[in-house]
Image 1 (cartoon, rainbow, N blue to C red):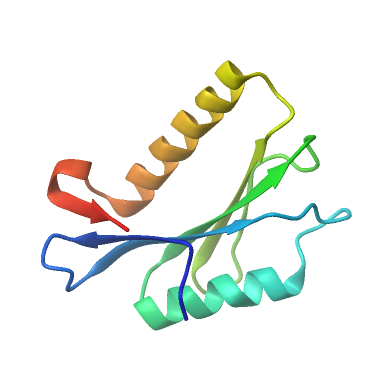
Image 2: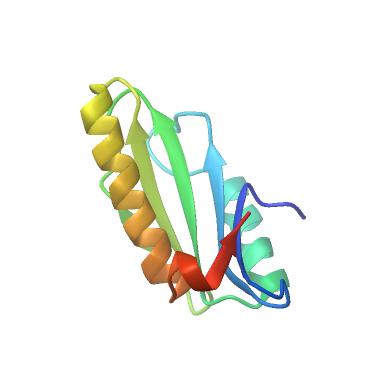
Length: 112
């Protein structure tokens, strides 16, 4: 298993965050295979939550979470059809989400 995004402590002994980027636009819902993949990452790394990010050219779903008695999976998207300023704002929001989910600051962890 190799997620697109992971955030480890400085000693690289504990993963604090895992995320996966998707470069496809689901029809009207998130594909089960994507959820299963993220669930596998979270289970293998013993994390309570993870983040899936979809690159899109329009808004297809509002931000939401998948919770079914196991790890929480946060779903976000980046609209690549927006202006560069808007994309930068979206990336800032994602960075804030990652920081909160990781429970730390960049100075005390290493992003991979």
